[in-house]
Image 1 (cartoon, rainbow, N blue to C red):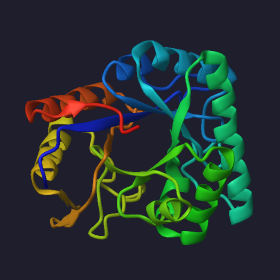
Image 2 (image 1 turned 90 degrees about the vertical axis):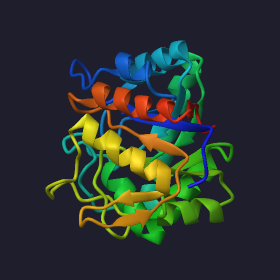
Image 3 (image 1 turned 90 degrees about the horizontal axis):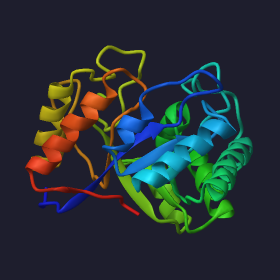
Image 4 (image 1 turned 180 degrees about the horizontal axis):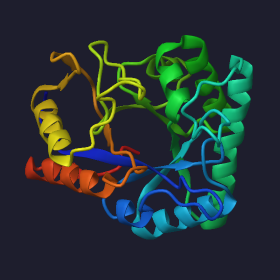
Length: 255
């Protein structure tokens, strides 16, 4: 892999709902350069969105909308029955909601990154990927799309004339095809910060991501994701930052 001078570090934030909170958003916003903010599908509500947007603005962190299947009980990790047209509409509604709250918080939404099951389905299925791309383009063609590296969503967003950026995950297992290991399987999530950092270091040197089967898969990268919804998230993000900075890589948003 060619030497990189800068790369984005992102996390999924604003995933509370009402009195219920998840993760330490304030601590994560001190470490990342981009925040994928839940916008009512799998988590969040207007107050949570506003607080997260305001905090991101104060920390100078770029914000993206993080739409999902409308599945608060399942945290957006279940595929719900929905046609491409229905997906197009609920993605547009969620992205539009965050843009509106961002206007109140005086902080813009710069990109869109699908969450959970929606991201996984869009990675593999062209019709779903195209529906998401249509929704983003209809809401605002200036919005970029952050997509899992090497997926159908990358292709659909490019075909729609949108700016597209590729993402890899510091804390998720990969299959030989470059897909994320389903969360129902062992090894889907890497909880050990040192293990994740070591794997990421090898990837940055070679462009080859280690897979669950012991091989590697080549991936492109503009942004590295650390999930914010587990107790080890802050430590994980800190270790990832250390790996990047030790290699002379600046943490900076992709947009």
